[in-house]
Amino acid sequence: MCTIADMKANPDDLLVLLAVSRSAKFTTAAQVLGLNHTTVSRRIAALEKALGGRVLARAGGGWELTELGTEAVRALNRWRQR
Image 1 (tube, rainbow, N blue to C red):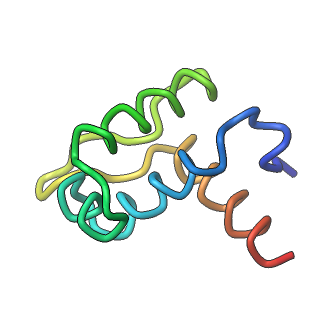
Image 2 (tube, helix red, strand yellow; image 1 turned 120 degrees about the horizontal axis):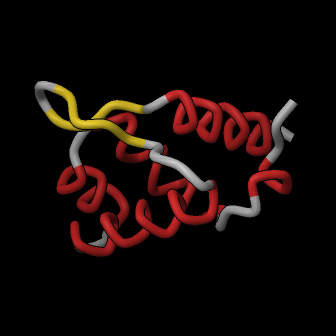
């Protein structure tokens, strides 16, 4: 079972990923989080570097989680439920 600690990822970056996964758009996630869309983009890039792979892939109407992104969101949700 993968945990946040195993990922060596910044929890704030994981929250950004969660917001993007819910809205499928960087701009909408940025508005929800009170950030600039370029900050969202930088946070996703930092997360991908920390995890060693892509967490988002382009989809028809925006972005969707990759397998790694899905695993990261699941780990975040388990961590948040503790």
